[in-house]
Length: 178
Image (cartoon, rainbow, N blue to C red; front, top):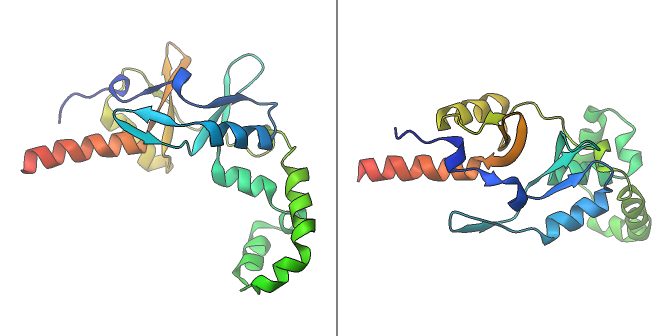
């Protein structure tokens, strides 16, 4: 395998969406909606936003599904995860949603004012700017992650996503096979 390093696939921090921890879910949703990532000839939408603390240190990450979880009406979140899941396992009559649509929409709007720090995930793994692509693959697979923050001298300088790693591995394998 070619000696590919994180720095070869990293999206620089200034080109990747990131927010301060005091931003509301609504503000983060707006940042995500307005962000487009153009990298290595591909354009995509961010699935994750980095969250920084008051000192500019990486504090966590928030995915789209974390935001949706944060918007979830309170009557579904006060029970255990198992209970919540059972509620969703029930096949709902879509006509019933019409009766409570305004109430649910108001609940979404209220909950969208929550700070992103309420729903963000902690950073469980990072990679170094000089790490080999195999280190990235290992950390993504072992930790079930699709994005890793990239550090250079203990400072976040960007992110590396599974899509770029996957595309590179595909390119190498296909070029060797054909």
